[in-house]
Length: 565
Figure 1: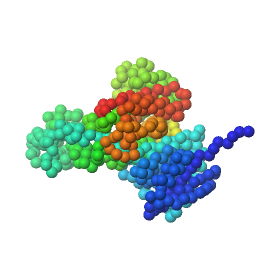
Figure 2: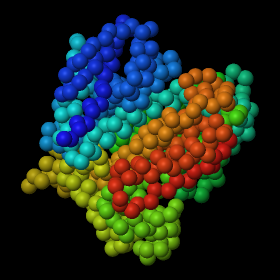
Figure 3: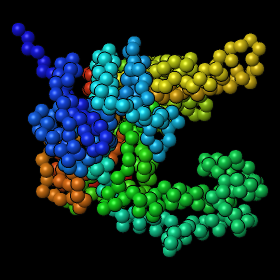
Figure 4: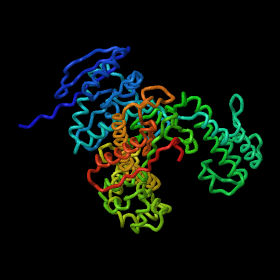
């Protein structure tokens, strides 16, 4: 007689408006077992009791709508199914015959610092009966997940939902930030800050130098049209003030202008105003958006967390009695490509901490710099320059890896959809793109239209080529994050008291995430154990994705008081 596997306890938790919530427990076949109506004051205690009983999987519309309130009350959720995040995956996946039906009720609108070109920004449309809508959506999502191959969609949705929890936990915890160090960096770099605001002294000096060289003492350097006209008058024929384009010219104005622009970016993105708005009580709390980019990468909607300048990392300082565990992965994307493609030759090159050195040792190229150009060119579809010249060499040495991305590129050029390892699929080209490709096949079409259509097709092919690699790397990182979180939850509270209060004041926690890097804030006596947990989580993430395929995903990991590299 075989024992039946126990059904995971599942509870849908839905906000119904006016500070009221409904919790619906589901049994076999997603049939409702019980229903509880709760006020906002009753909710934290009720949820905490259920967590203590059986750590159920909570079915939430979106973690951001409920979890911050629970965290404020010191209540943690172990596992969830985030309907908004999973809807985007299951609606667009091309890995099942019947993906999820699109629904305006289940599309989020969130602004993003990163403004990804293909980011879904459709409006939300609230349902008349939010509880029934949530249950119907969950049942529909379960049907699509069950149709997926090898449980990959199940793993992806679980990891994506965990990411939703982690984003809110990191915002609640905050990244420890020393405001005095930050102000010192600004003063050393930008110069004296004028009373009441305005342009700092070092920027004023550089601006005066630029104006003197250009012969216009009243020139507004922040006006692109006026600056371009002034540059043209002195013979600097550029179409933009992009630093790469300016650097191609040897005119005396280039050096001070580039220096001015660099300081202007720092002042605008992370200057005194940013410090005042985003850092409070020794914590930087950005707004993370899991899955905010179509590949599954995270975006941010405030604070510029994903563009943190290197010079400011020294301001990321652990509290007294605490340490930072900083870990990142070297060359994550090409390692994912080797594993996805089952390319054992490329996997051998990836053994150890430097994949590019392994590519050199394979004989594909002669120097590490050439290896980097070649590998990046292979993943991003480079056809010109050093990358374009070197990519063909990789096809001889790593045919399986190259065939994998070449196939994705061809599918994109034909207007098709590609998918990551776990099943997140790329968006389809726009209707305008499809019409352009159709017109290019007409017998009487102008050749300029044909050339434009081919160029747009190649551009889309480069997008799909990289989509499968970047998206799978994002999946690995999500599982890594979830596994780190799972291990840290088992750590005991520490006697070390953080300077900032909150739900993580005495417990090690994730404090920052950027694509392939994490920063943990941990009591000093737990730092070594936390670092080991990060290593273990990376190994589990690799096995979860690729089983026993021999691919190394090594970490650059250190324990330090500052995040400075």
